[in-house]
Length: 157
Image (spheres, rainbow, N blue to C red):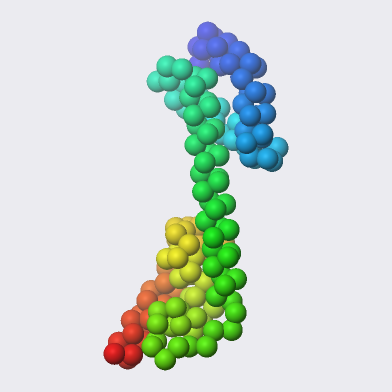
């Protein structure tokens, strides 16, 4: 890194880091999240330094996107938890063999994987993370669940 570039990065960091961290903290309501967002924004800026025309604007745009991603993820989790809580009540299978009733009869690991992935909209990686299991296991449970549901639905015809 050239000396002038180092000086420019250092000046920007000294002026903007505290502001960006405070802004991110205020929006997130959590100082550790604000710190993480500010650090990540600067990291991304440094990897693209030569192609960024407005570094300050870039920092705030990245921080806003990171916070939006975090809020979307939290919303998916809240929705999923409400859904799981609703489905956790003792479900008595209906006479029509509805998909919801069939899902409630799946083994726990398959049912949770199906609810998180298909109803919660989480990726395989996110499901694996939340279930504390490898992605391969989650993938296998989803395949098994689909096969079981397909068979049950065909039997119900």
